[in-house]
Image (cartoon, rainbow, N blue to C red; front, side, top):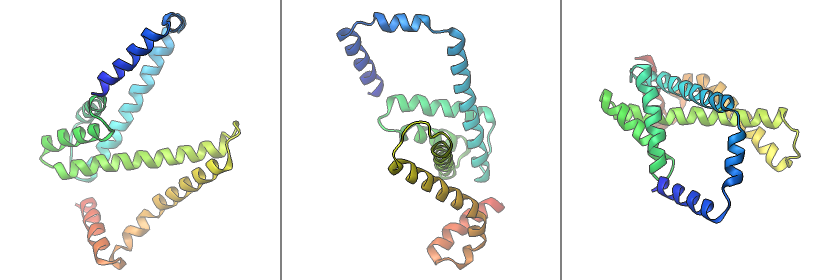
Length: 186
């Protein structure tokens, strides 16, 4: 549905506007830059697959790197046709979980992968707000960005201490924390 909608929008734009300037601009682009962009994109996806493999290994879902790399692309392909962003994550979870007979752990690994990616995005945005302040961005945008980056960094750094204090937490939190710590120790 999304792919069809995308094709329809591009078709409408090309029929209502002259496409020749677009093709002229594209013809002047250097193929080396296109190849470099594709290579960077693939390198990024390769790192994402490796990160996901490490997170899944914590949950005892062991697979070959090639498998994770392929499932990353299955998820991206699925996101083209399923409305929303969760379709690709669901596909990644199902493929990995069925292959290893551990659906719950596969879902948890995909959620953890998304969480780690979100943390990295917060940190990148905070660093950009601090160090790359060339454009006049209002402080109402910069301050919360830096605050969220700092808070998530503090939470990340405090996680090992929190894990040691699980036995002091209320029962529901303690049970959830115990199962996570036990998964790591096994």
